[in-house]
Amino acid sequence: MAANKIVVANWKMNLSLGGSAKLAKEVADAFVGFDKGEVAVCPNFLSLLEVNKILQDSIVKVGAQDVFWEGYGAYTGEVCPEMLAEAGCKYVIVGHSERRKYFNANYELIHKQIKAVVENKKLIPIICVGENWDERKTNKRDQVLLEQIQQSFSGIVLERDQQVIVAYEPIWAIGSGTALEPEEAEYAHKFIKMGLNVIFGSDVAENNFRVIYGGSINPGNVDGFVGMDGLDGLLVGGASLHADEFHRVADIILSK
Ligand code: PGA
Image: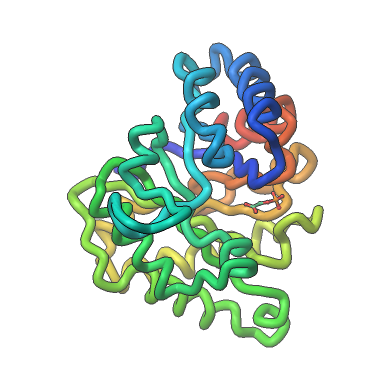
């Protein structure tokens, strides 16, 4: 049985500790009595503990925005899966395109991160894939997605029912104000599922994986994604910085 639909907020590096705590309180208030699907927010590392404390009685859970692939050790500046789990995280984003753009994270490194998170077993990884504008323009999207899926997941062994989320985020749609047409997202989601079928077999692909969409989702365009075939949820950036907008997006997509 596939898991619930999920809506995840990616707060990126937009908020201070105080700003994160304030938004977490607003989110906690907005989601009082909410009982549909799964909801999570991903604050910066420094704010995780505080945000987790504020949301401890809420349906809204906490995730991190990145993770290192080694365990405890001499790795200056890094944070390992066990530390995130200890801080109360349930999810962790891996391979966001901004990590790829600014930190040269490639799929070889991303594969190590996924492996570490999967082997640690305490966090659900949210792995971002997606083509850039040039790749889209030159009809390379499918090829790029397939490569990203293969490089991310080949050799990864999942336990029975261990959950993994793939976020399809066309890079050109992120922060642009314009989401992908739902029909195109539907195609890409099917294509990603096909790739997962090839690597893991259809039982695992169906049972262990959710595929969510991210890129300029807001209350004004989310209706178009309701009822989209193969959509297991959303990853929301800009709109998630306003508790009411984030709540609205979650309410609309998780109600159906
Ligand atoms: P956006 O960000 O909703 O602001 O486009 C999405 C993301 O980067 O995850």
